[in-house]
Amino acid sequence: MRRFQNRVAVVTGASQGIGQAVARHLSMDGATVYAADVSADSGDAGGVRSRQVDVTSEVQIETLFAEIHAVHGRLDMLVNNAGIPGEGNLGELTVDAWNRVFAVNVTGQMLMCRAALPLLGSGSSIVNVSSVAAHVGFADRAPYCASKAAVLGFTRALAAELAPSNVRVNCVCPGTVQTPWIERLVGEEDGADAKLAGMRARQALNRIGEPSEIAATIAFLLSDEASFITGSIIMADGGMLAVR
Ligand SMILES: NC(=O)c1ccc[n+]([C@@H]2O[C@H](COP(=O)([O-])OP(=O)(O)OC[C@H]3O[C@@H](n4cnc5c(N)ncnc54)[C@H](O)[C@@H]3O)[C@@H](O)[C@H]2O)c1
Picture (cartoon, rainbow, N blue to C red):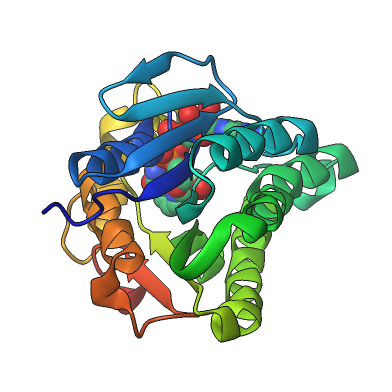
């Protein structure tokens, strides 16, 4: 029997990158997966049900969980992966830009967890995606670093709150991983190769991570094999934090 047979999962930010790899991994392992992303709904394909959900919209989140409640009556796994970058030095930072990053990266996770709560029974599990940026200060990326650090506190508090119900809550902090996000960051102009080399070099394993490697880490935390792990912050960063 496959590891997640008969289980129901929601993964946010699942149209591309890490979220897409997580949705595929869970689906391959037998789960029915709702891939929630702000980008277009592409329907149902191969065990993955794509739904257009902006994690900052309480109305859209309610619609998603109303469907899951009606169809399945429960949720076993929630992966809060949707995130956006937040750049700009302090002097140029607007309150709107700051609030937008927190709305998606932090409040979005809270809204998803709150809406999922009535459907999460004993043995279910949540994974929140943070970043090495929660642990390392990157110049000109204060909103992003601060928002990802907030995810650590949110994870620990929720783990304490939900432990009596045997609902586990953990957090994964990826290092630099090959996704459209990083492709956008590196760009195609002169110097792209040097930027990529720098990103590789700052990780002890001297390479960029693959989305499938983050997906495997998240799947482990969601699985029964991690039944005694809650409130943990797991680095999946190729050793970046270890060598800083
Ligand atoms: N790629 C990396 O190197 C890296 C490193 C550390 C942490 N992370 C984190 O991993 C997560 C995924 O990153 P990625 O590299 O796959 O990014 P990505 O930009 O390639 O994909 C992010 C996905 O999230 C979706 N999204 C954005 N805003 C949304 C919203 N409001 N509601 C629903 N969906 C929304 C996007 O449409 C997109 O499909 C993010 O939380 C990011 O902070 C990524």
